[in-house]
Length: 354
Image 1 (cartoon, helix red, strand yellow):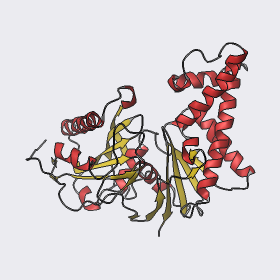
Image 2 (image 1 turned 45 degrees about the vertical axis):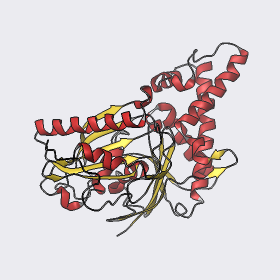
Image 3 (image 1 turned 120 degrees about the vertical axis):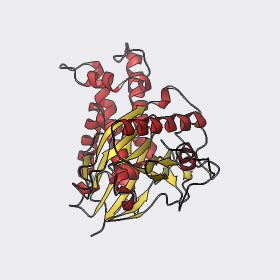
């Protein structure tokens, strides 16, 4: 991997958080709707589901033994929760799970209803659900129930799941954001997906020669770091992400994968054009908001040259990037949106253009 002296600024124009893209417009993202209880989206996050489940368990404890054991709901694995749902006979554990799922489905339907009242969402015909929650049995059931509740409410919007693995969507979407000229002579790009619990880093083969719409784009190597378990500070998290990227470069060199000199970073929050985060990064450790912290520059300093030239590091909202991974499969509707149910609730809405 080539290096050069550190600089204070990224080379070339900093074009982050793009709204106008070939074939699609980002109508809105990172909406933060409020009611008397705070941010509306917080009621439909994976964190909110765990809190609902804990309240239902407390009610059971008043009558006797907790059917899900002694661990707090936030500490139970998805596998443990799904096992409780998959018991062949009805039990107190399945009853508690079903009660929490039903209440969460109602909250999710309410949140979707609120989003659909916003100007950037009013014409949305289909909503794709991503994030970590839908990959569990509990999450899938809650989403199906929310769809049924929306129909009963007279809100006719299609609810679907990501076409890709939940860990891949936030990486593959960067194929639609990399400047086209940078793909010439290259096989793949590097991408990072930063969430409130996990960071994913991967090599995305764009396969743009076989499918110019990136419908065949594929993650060929991925590393997932559950930073919430280690509780790093901001600097430690940036260092770890840089290390993950450097490992991906070395892997590409060994496997003779021709990496474009490009890194895409998906991150929660509203991304300014200069690549700083205006708001919405409250689930990340330390202060990520404000002009003083510039993640693209910090990562670029670690790897200013990559492959055939100066590295371009761009940043966008993580829900936008995850949504863009679905773009090739959304051509049958004009207006569509994405909700990512993870530590928080990410959101973005799109309009396809001819």
